[in-house]
Image 1 (cartoon, rainbow, N blue to C red):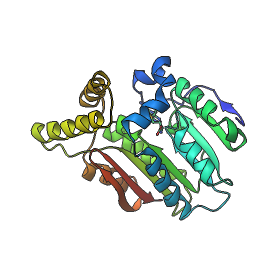
Image 2: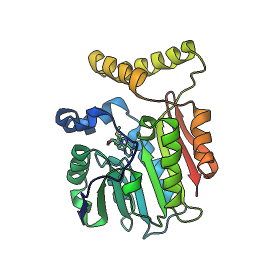
Image 3: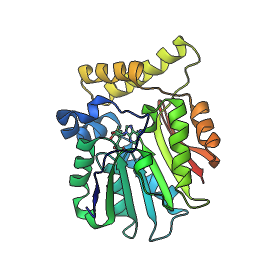
Image 4: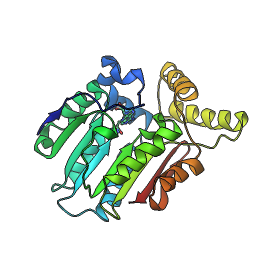
Length: 240
Ligand SMILES: C[S@@+](CC[C@H](N)C(=O)[O-])C[C@H]1O[C@@H](n2cnc3c(N)ncnc32)[C@H](O)[C@@H]1O
């Protein structure tokens, strides 16, 4: 990597799930993503297309929650002139990203921390995949606003994460059941599916798609468009 910002994280009310500090979980992360979310490669292609609509060939791209390095690798392969600032609070996940991104190391700067630890930009685009659902709504809005502050005017921010309607317990249970059924139908082990369900039900502050869109708008993003919707996984693009 060009450099490793290991200066400790800026003061932040954030915290992230312990599982990202578990070496065994991190070791199996890439396989697990492919198994839990078979559409992830398609999603990476859509993210690339949405960023490339506005980003020049030599764009500087911000990747928030870049642990594992999978989306940065896809973007790096698709756009050989882009450079990346990859931000993540989990050291093991950042170390895995460093290994995943080894062939692209001269184009990636890693930052250990949260959005407050990211450079000020200006970036030509930003993305955050499977990450924002871990942030409670107020912190999510603050984080998204901090992303926007780092983007050039009109630059795209592409996000995708868990989101489902839950006006009442019955609706919440319905979507959790559908999520579980999808994971089982994709061949995941029932014990792993059980763990994932419990984590979502108890630790992940999932918003409804309406609130997710509103958070992006309240943080100042314009033309917010839902480009992806697959049961409990949704994606939006908005413009700074
Ligand atoms: C499920 S992983 C997704 C990693 C990668 N984006 C991908 O698509 O494979 C979630 C990542 O978000 C990171 N994370 C959790 N809270 C965060 C926050 N507040 N800011 C940035 N990253 C965060 C975790 O450390 C973890 O690496």
